[in-house]
Every structure is written in C-alpha cells, then in structure tokens.
Length: 377
Image 1 (cartoon, rainbow, N blue to C red):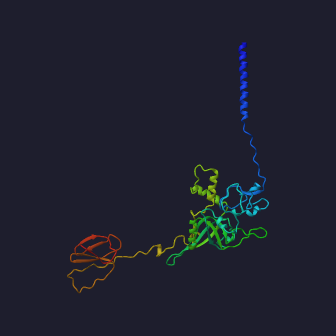
Image 2: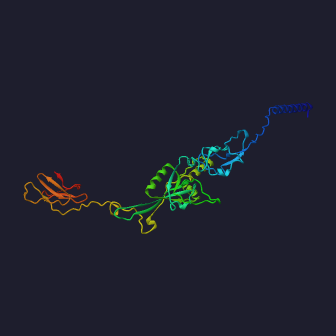
Image 3: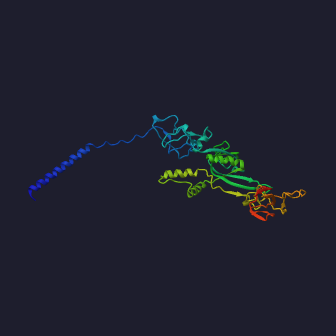
C-alpha cells in the first residue's frame, strides 16, 4: 500500500475516534438523576376499602383490610389495627360510597339494629314491604335475613248456583331478598354460638316499586306463603335469563363490567314466567277450570223467543165490532198497506218472513227487537 494513503487512513481513524469520545461526553453530561424510592408510611395501620364500595353494600371479610397510614393524617374516626375488631364489622352496611384505598370511618358503616340500617341495606331504586306469615306459610322459621324466597299465592275462586269453587296456588314472584323477620335483621344465636330457629309473624322483603304494588294486591286476594330458595338456584335462573335475552350485555363490555351486570341480574326479583297449580292437578275430585258464573255452563242464559203457532189476525177497517180482542202470543209485527193491517208472529233469529195473507205478497226482513212493531207501506 502507498505510504501516503496509509497516513490518510490513520488520520481519518484518529478523527473518528475523537468525534466519538466528544459525543459521548456531551450526552453523559445531560443524564437524568436517579429516582429515589418513595417513602413507605411508618404510621399506624388503618382500615381501608380493598375495592369500591357502593351505598348499601354488606361488608364481608374481603371488602376491607388494614394498611399503614401516615401518622400525621390519621383521624379519630378511623379504625386502627389493634383497637378495632374486624369481626364486629362483618354484616354492617355501607352508608355512602367509599372509593378503593380510602380509609373507612366509623360513620360510614351502619350496624344491624342502628337507626337507618334498613334504608341503607336497600339497593338503589328498591323498596321494603312486609308480608304477614305464620309457622306454616313462613317455612317454620327457617328463613333468615339475607335468604332469598319465592312468593306463592293461594286463592279460591267461587262460582254461581252452588258450583264447586276453583282452588289454585300460583308462584307470583321469585328471587326476593329477605331483609328482616319481625323486627330482627340478624340471626339469633344462643350462648354456644348456634343459630336459633324462632317463629315469626312478618317478613320484610326487598322489591321493586312495581312488585310492591303487586304484593299489596295479592294480600287482598288470598294467602301468601314463602318458599325458601336454594343458593344454587340464582345461577340457573341467570342462565335462563341470558338464554331468553332478558339480560343483555353491551358489545365491547370489559370482563369487570360483564361481571357487574351478571351479579346485578342474579340479585334482581323475578315477576314473569310464573307457574300455577289448580285443585284438579292435585285431586281428581277437584276442579281444574274456572267455575261458571251467571248461569250453568259458565254463560248467561239466552232469552228464549220460540215462535208461537198463533193464527194471523186481520183487522180491516170494516171488521165487525163484536169480534173478540186479539190475544198477545209473543213478539209480533203489524204490517199496514193502505187501510188493511196484518199482525204476524215473529220467531227468534234473522231471516224471518213478514207476510200479508190478504195481499198474497211475502217480503223477507229482519226480526225487530220489540213486539208489536208496525211497518207501514
């Protein structure tokens, strides 16, 4: 290789290396400082919401938890770990919405028996109604707050003329949440911690405003009974509602939104697709159809207008004054042509013939509703 070319190549290599070192030093001087780790609060552990809690949410073990909180931000209304008993908070109801990670205050929870507990336990747009029950219609006391029941209406439909009445039972409402039995909103336990079963006279249910109206009317029709539902029935009812299109999930919904919609549907009362049983389904000696009203056969007795074989009577103007007076023998019409009048008996139905014997002319017409009508030509 030529010596001159070798010198030029070495010079270019030196210039490139110098440029690289200059660029490196330039960018290294403007590097960002290293981020320092956030300080971990060292204060006491306070009770916070693990997820967003809406008003009316019943507190469970997975809804709340303790976490460290800055000491200078701790308030007297907070629940402090070591001072608050978490078990006593289970079953309480959220009075107003609490965001995830927000400390729970003592005024945010309502305990059973406190004033306003029932109103706080109601879901948005729901109502509370009370139904009278007995040991027989109330599942012998084995219904507690939080259970779900169906409402069965038993009634008797009477007929006329001594006909046998229709006895029927109908499941008018389903999946109703029990809020309280009598004036108790929580289970009664004995000294051993076992649940006590007691008879009660009333049951308070959570329903929609429309269902509240139906229950008010149902109490005046017959007797209402409770039917305790299985816990697994809610899932099967949900599958039926989804298959029937009653529960609609919008397109593009996230899994969290879909789960929220399905949970709300599982808790909703059902007032459609009810079933019924009549006395004929239970015993062959009972009715299975509505009893007749207003006469035998379930129909009003039709008036009988059987035509009478009464002779036609002619009453010309020059007739004998000593002739006997005509005797009324049922519905009839009088046809007058000029000075001659003819009275004809009329049968039931349409298409009866009105005739005049003297003139020998027959005309078809419709039966008039009243007797003794006059048609003049």
